[in-house]
Image (cartoon, rainbow, N blue to C red; front, top):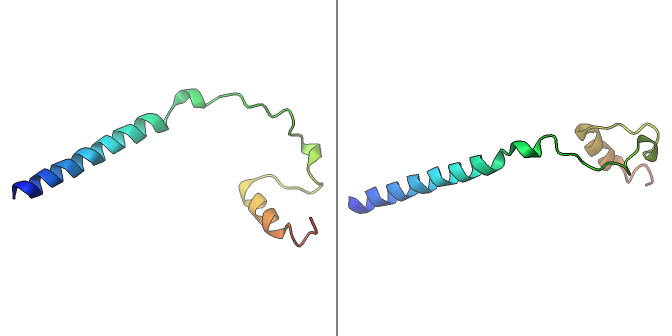
Length: 69
């Protein structure tokens, strides 16, 4: 019975420690509002009709071979 209690206590301790580590490092307010250098990205460098967005980018990636690119 003591072994089960020790194992359960160890598991709970590791879960608590893991939650604390991930929650404290995942949210960092300094990352929000960080400036990114996007000087080389211009809308004119993309083909006409290019649609920006995550859903449209995956769609365009799937059609890339069919478009001859």
